[in-house]
Amino acid sequence: MDIGGTAKKIQKATKVAEESYKKMQLMMEKMQEMMEQMQQMQTDMETTSRQVDGMEYELAEQRAILEAMADEQGLDVEDVLDAADLPEPPHQEAEPTEEIPVDESAEEAAPSQQATSRPSVNEE
Image (cartoon, rainbow, N blue to C red):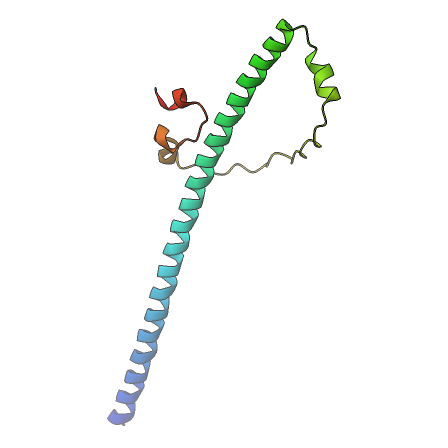
């Protein structure tokens, strides 16, 4: 039996195993980084969604106020809009059919993270 040859084969196998382990560790680190990036993107998306919802609400409030003021002045809002030189409305995309899981802990953002044109919104 050749002990020297066996020792070399064991050393080679050990070296290959160590290299494979190092590669696996690097891959795991990359995967962890990607998971963190995805979580941050999801948090950013949820924050942006809440901000857009707030802006849509504020816009609806402003529209209601303007319509009430127009009524007081005897103006027909639809006539004013028809006469206005407005850009084409944006194209609406179809709602996604697949539900994306939401991290419930990210939904409780501090009011200071919400953008608004109304200071009273952040004072609750």
